[in-house]
Image (cartoon, rainbow, N blue to C red):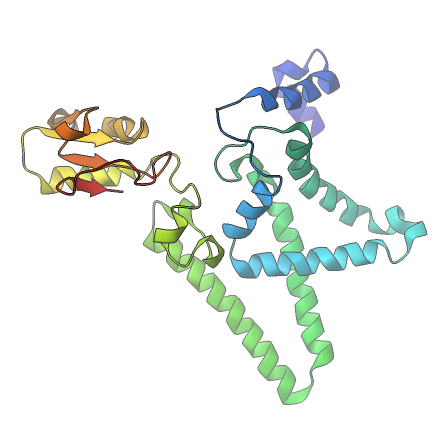
Length: 272
């Protein structure tokens, strides 16, 4: 991994270690005018955008791993080398941005690469829970508890699948109940479609339902206009983007940098 990181990152060729840490420090200077996120920013995003069952199993697996590490302190590394490596790979990428005050953008997309490690702990927790049920319960009690646990697992998987199918191709906005009881609440607390991919669907809806030759549109940010380029040429010609809201027939937003605070007349058509 180290070899390929250096190979595909030319900046490191001259001074691999020094330039690597220089890059870490440099990211703290990418100031966007916003306040630095709290230290728990990434952890909160991980918990909110991951199915609750996965997170629960992760904490069980992590707790068991830590407990095993300190059972025999003298043999800490020889007997638990793999566990130590996995913990290192998961937490170091999260801790470094806190230390260096790195600028983080919406969500935890800078750290998606640690998700496989997250799943390793989750699977370990799942195995531990099944073993716990087998040890603590016997006879019909074991069958009932074990079946109930399997039912919870299957229900969680089905729920996640339903969300992905229902919101395709925008399943990236997935959030569990911790994000808010419904999407109306969640959109005011978290960045959802920060790439603005949903603008295409909004534009297609406007073009389909409005037969005017020229349609004046006001968008909340740049992706609203960029999505025009994926539309057929004849449709693109009908869209005219205006800066003045009073001159627009439609206002489109993806709730990035805009939470409905703009003074929009009731007569306007709003797609958010």
